[in-house]
Structure formats: C-alpha cells, structure tokens
Length: 264
Image (cartoon, one colour):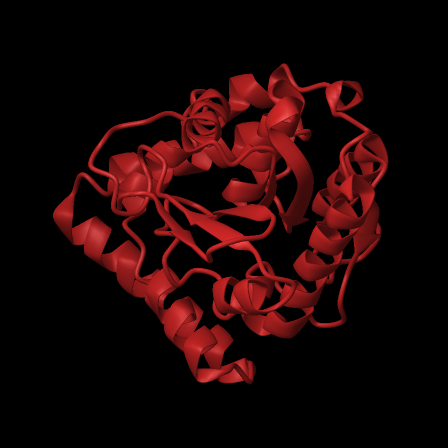
C-alpha cells in the first residue's frame, strides 16, 4: 500500500504489524482512537516483504528502510508501535536508529534478544517453507492453522472488528510469513541488550505467561535495557491488540502523552 498518514496534526505514530501482515486493519480501533485522543498523525505503510507491498524485502534491511521512510516523510521523530515481528523490527530500529524515534511501544514482540529462540523460529519457518512447496501439504498446514485460530476465537469474547482482524490474521500466507523471518538467527546472535537506548520513552507489553517462560524473560530483559515499564494483562494472548484492544489503545495514548509532555 502507498504510505498513508491519518490525522491532520499531532504527534506522529508509526504502526508495525506482526508477521508479514498488512497494517490496514491489524490494530482495530487504534488508528481512530489515537486520531481522536490525544490527536495524532498515524503512519500506515507496508514495508517491503509484508502486507500489500509488491517489493521484496528482508528483516535485516527493515530498520534502515523505516528510518529512511521516516526521514522522507519529514515526520520524525515518531512513536513506533510494533506487535510480534513488528515489535522485533521496532526493537532493532531503536538500537540502530534511535534518532528517528520519540517513543517505543512493544506489543508482545518477537524476542530478538533470544538467540536460541530465534534460531529455532527460523529453522521451523524454513521447514514450513519447504513443506509449502508441496501443494497438498500447504493446504493441510493452512487448514490446520485456520482450525487453531477458530478454536482461539471460540474461547475469546472479541469485538466484531477484532474478530474480523483475527480471522484475517489466521488466513496466513505461510511461505511469505516464513520468508519474513529469514536472517533472524544472525540478527539475534548480534543483538546486545546494552546497545538499546535508555533515553527514549518506552513500554513493553508481554502476554500473560509465567515468569519462568523464556519469552517473558526475554521481554523483561528488553524492558530493563530500555528503562521501560513491563506491562502484562490477565488473559492476554500473543495478539493482545485483539483480545485487549482498549488496554492497548490506552497504553499507546499514555506513552504519546508522556512524549508530548517531555517535549513541550
């Protein structure tokens, strides 16, 4: 999709969806909510290799690409909001290009500071990519994933817009998703939490997991490195922007207000 900026004035906020998903509709109610209060300009853009983009892109190139985009738009520094892999990209963006950021909100981000976990993820996705080359296996995998998402929806009470987004996310392009994490093993191996900036206002939201969970521990370390608050809501799952949309909106609003107050 071409870059869209929703809202006429106010602090700029860039949204980064998870996986290789399209940004439009990924965060139900967030765009409209931020434009209404506190009054934001929300940047919607599908980076190369994701969403509606027809341009190939790599995870390694994403931070520099987004930094250049922010510069071209003339809207920086921005508050960046990233979920899952979008959160991983936001983490790398904060490390590599802190000058383009006014604030960071990480929503259950892919833990790019967990080298072993990222290596397992990439191995799994490369296997998925190979299996999907066989049409019948691709259909079976897609059907199995669709049933898994349907079971999740049956257990959740979602707003209609969040249910629609959940259905869309569950209809995955598996090969594209697999390609979206190419290189994450190498990136995570070179990731040092001490390289993350502590001067940028930030918040890390983690799903409702046990304190001993490896992802929870990785999120805790990222929050500590950023000097950020670690937030978790009872019952929150990975796509917490869908099962806790109001809390997500208020968390982003709070950070935007903090940034605005610090710069006024």
